[in-house]
Length: 250
Length: 250
Image 1 (tube, one colour):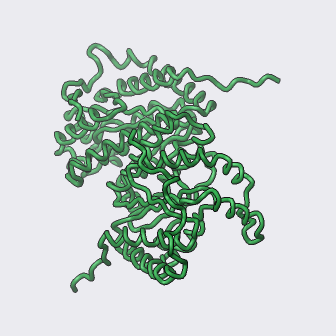
Image 2 (cartoon, rainbow over the protein chains, first blue to last red; image 1 turned 120 degrees about the horizontal axis):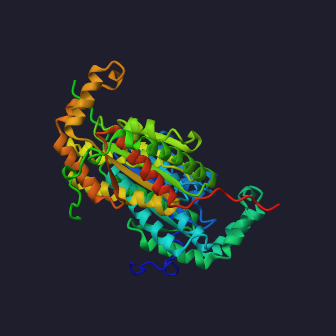
Image 3 (cartoon, helix red, strand yellow; image 1 turned 45 degrees about the vertical axis):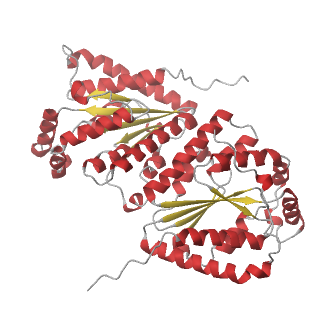
């Protein structure tokens, strides 16, 4: 076991002090547009692929990030896989089976809204699996993500959507009160909230035992979340130095 | 790197001396029937699953084994996945993607006719991949097969179909000459045959570096092959001590 490096409680869930929404508006728009350009080149080139994993507590703004960050991208090269309670068929397979099915092929960008990490989070918090199985699954996740990187040029980019317990309450309460948000309300979310501390421990384990590092994204300010994710993705994609396939000489 | 333990050249490709086809006929029939019974219980119980991997040179009798050993089984609980040249979609994913899609769900028995091992055999022999990638793929295979075992109660049972170079020539020649076998004739098989020694080395590597052990099945005598595979499968399944779900008290 590696020594735990990240303590979530030590990391802010809010935007850096002094920064305001209006300060980042133009830059976030530019980044969202640039992300679309880079995704187009990746799609046209068909050499690399990107797997974006969004993990976080209920109300941490995963859906909002999907809505706000990717609208410069073409859906021809963008897939979204939302992992909910496993189907009967999925449950009759190893926990990575359904994730593996949805990983991006070359040229594609795929977003996992929740992921295989649920199988060492919700399942662990509720004691549905043994600690021995948690460890084995963590090792299997590391091997799986490494496989995607070395064998299919996949960038695996993981965001932990870091929300404060107070902000979660506000978000869940809005779902209960606001008619336009009520469709997302779920009594079960309030039940899971009671297990907050156990979830934080389980997330810390997953983050600290992962070979591929996580980005801890402060989400209490949604405008900062969008900026953070867009900026991270643009930087990672720029670093690939991709270019459109060259015109062939006549 | 582990020390190579198995040298294929030291292992006979024929039935043990003194044994004749007629000696095993009844016993093989009994084993095939018993395999069907055990598979039925496994299917009804829905707790375990079996992945059978058949790997070997062209003409080593993989198709014949599929035909002869499993006819006591119900196809409701039996799947066959034959891995040929990857499709364009498969090729745009990591090498384990297509294998993972076809692994058995609980209760099922799945036969892989060829498998993910091709990606460190044919691809290695032709130098389509680097030695570094061979090593990484071998590690990924070990992690993958272990995942099936610990997370889905899957028995991974692997047979190397051990044929002599002389017997392969006879088999390939029959495909060329016999009108009932000509449909299987393929000039490419004769080309691959020229790389025999490189293939043996690649197989030895795969066998010796595998965490889950292989069964080396002598196939020059096809009747012995059938007996060997049926016997191995029956023994492995008997050891699970499976039983039909009990009748519930009224």
